[in-house]
Length: 135
Image (cartoon, rainbow, N blue to C red; front, side, top):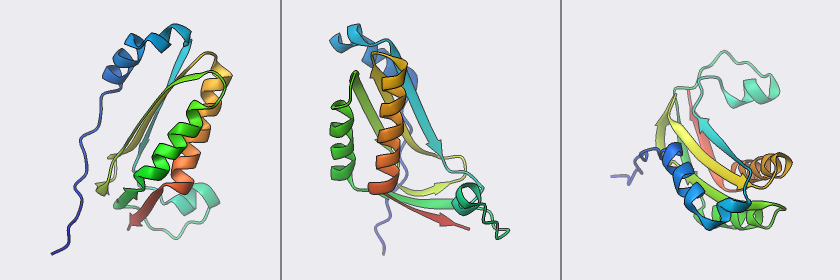
């Protein structure tokens, strides 16, 4: 029998923000930015490359390399003006509408926070995760 990982329960962004604002580093932060990636019905190839084979996504098999995610978080903390980074990744067999990931970034000014969110989500998506769409 295969040892399939079960999807996880999604975190509360409200709770994450509450915790982040109670951290002493929050005194240096002027902005938080959150990302919530979810499983969509439209295939990645159609959205990203305009390739439409008429198929729809019914779910996704999702996994990640925790060490690579931790390395990406460490790199994000080195960016200018970034004081808070929190990441949650789901795993297992996900359905359309399920949460794939949450990312919360806190920093001093908007350009720094936007750059950090873009960097971290892109690094996680391109170097740390495996997404297999089920059609």
